[in-house]
Amino acid sequence: MIRKLIQTAYRAVVILVLCLFGAIYANLFFQLDWRLDLATNLLPQVLILSALLTVLCICVKDRIIANANLALTILLFAFIFLVVSDNNSISGDKPDISFLTHNLNLENTNYKETEDLILEIDPDVMLLSEFQPGWNAKLAKLAVKYPFKFTIPNEKGHGISLYSKYMIMENRIEHFASVDFPCIVSKIQFKDQKIKVIGVHLNPPINQYEYTQLGLQVEALKEEINKSEGEPVVLLGDCNFSPYSPFYRSILSETSLQGTAFTTTLKNTWHHQRHPLGKVLGTNVDHIFLSQHFAPVSRKVFPKTGSDHNPVFLKAVFKNLKKEEE
Image (cartoon, rainbow, N blue to C red; front, side, top):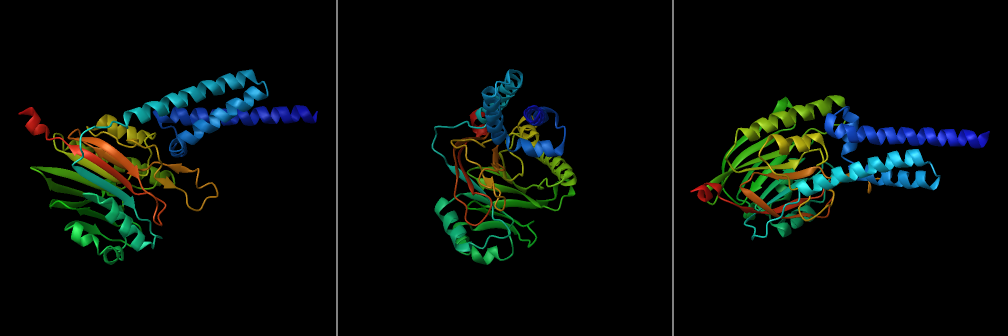
């Protein structure tokens, strides 16, 4: 009797887990629920759990559930493989411009370590989010390398700052979809063309309302990008969605931008700091999107310096499409 109850309970749990994994997979295409969308950000972890569940079902000779779970595991693997393949193009040319995006984190006080790392990385254009008023003074050494900057400090986590070695010709602040987090839209003079740089820190989807706000931000952001058709565009920052998310994929499918999330590395850019499983609950939410005027050469995820986010550094080649057309 007890053995039968255990078997029934086991099968019920396995079926529930299988249904959950199936719902996460379905949400990749249909956006069924905001919580499932959050789960898609951990899709590699879901794949591993699905594979382990398959092995468990094989071991206990539960053939029907094992076959169903195996089919789902294959589908998850195929989806991840396609996403990685679509976001890892590499140019063999010598890079001539580089970008860095880094969420500093409100609680981060490792000022010198952060400054030293930035000086070591030496990006041409850099976006820093969660930029508090005190960071201006703490990053004083950067003033020599970056004569051009546009800073919006804020003590509540809404601060953002753009640094550039090249002249910033235009600047404006945008609150896409009227969300509190400000975004920077700039134009930087590089060679004989202006590059439109959109620096973002998008809304963290911590509940259904904030998730909806994030979706509205993404829609407004796509409109901004599409207004710049034919113009060199770089979108970078803490996007709060992974390459597996429908939000990320909609930017690729509904604008002219290309993703670089897996260029030469598969490393995650964010890990939960306080959760006991923080080291495995990581995902890739800090992104650098490029228009077709650029070809990515390499992407590197640097160690943390007190933040829960890693600095993400991308080298690229700038292609003057106007001259190529002539």
